[in-house]
Amino acid sequence: MIYSSAQDWRNAPRKKVLLFGMSGLGKTHVSNLLRDHGDWFHYSIDYRIGTRYMGEYIADNAKREAMKNPFLRDLLRSDSIFIGSNITFNNLAPLSTYLGKPGNPAKGGVPFAEYMRRQEQHREAEIASLLDTERFIGRADELYEYPHFVCDTGGSICEVVDPNNPDDPVLTSLSRNTLMVWIKGSDTHSAELARRFDKAPKPMYYQADFLKSRWSEYLAQNDLTEDQVDPDAFVRWAYASALAHRQPLYEGMAKWGVTVTAEEVADVTSTQGFDDLIAMALERR
Image (cartoon, rainbow, N blue to C red; front, side):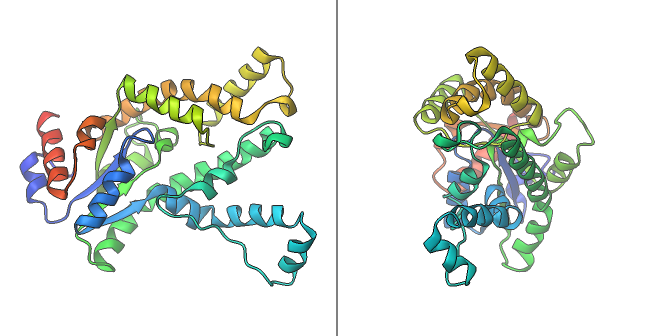
């Protein structure tokens, strides 16, 4: 690890951390706090995915829908209007909407083959965005003169790495340049995340083999064809098993860094509080 002890962390002139864990446990909240109240550069993996690597896909999908409207079609063809996504660190809806959900097109679903194609685009974009971390650390210091750096990862980071491979290229690069910090949730947090997801199911990225097996099982259990699947019903059904699927992957990744709990993160209200939390995590490792 790039910091060998709590004292090493406290004395470091440049602090560089990467936060990972399930969505909804405080990664972006802490990143925003550090950015707003200290000399920290906030690098959002999801924002990078949605702008640098998938921005064109997202915009083209919106244009494709607009072309179905004769009024908008003529304006688009004459370059009279512009369509783009207004993605931000705190609003990633354009990316989620593009990923979509498989199932009945009348209910907003996309064909499973198209869904998997978009999933693969996301996989490639997420890997590229994670590998860009090293370059952005340099940019943060040299271009913007931020001494400290926080990488705010998406919940799907565990789907694109192999934590049991000591030569995994993504984890090797990230651990060489940042202190990787797992925000660990409890069973209570998992239940709350599932409740939130059930209330407002959203598209997510998962490993291809996991998705294919869940899809086949869902069709067989419910005796449905692809076009009969309610997209929201499928992603709700898959989410609980997805949480269980990701937990051991996060635990494996934790070996590459340190662990803090979601409760501890929730108590952080200042940059000093964050420094103290990371120092404590290094002491108990």
